[in-house]
Length: 119
Image 1 (tube, rainbow, N blue to C red):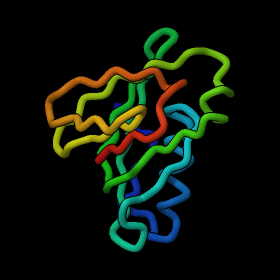
Image 2: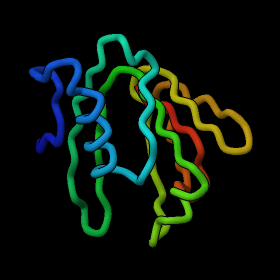
Image 3: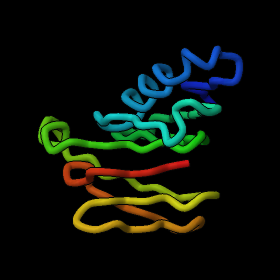
């Protein structure tokens, strides 16, 4: 499995920027907000190219991916994200808050998403 990021051996102060850069590479432009920025930030991310798409798996401390309307409009191509919450509940906020329990599949058009929480 190819690893994009593993913060295990990184100093804590470097992890915020590393998670941000990895998320920008693997996903769509967004702001990465850590639920507990003073706590133990950790992330292990794997990424595969699959034709014209990519697949990534992220195991991390709680993060929020916030996309502004401007960021959503900047995407040249439509981006559809499929997500399976494996352990913790995920949250998606567009017109309303949607809670995604472990094991559920979430499909979302990232041109319209505002907040997506993953753990």
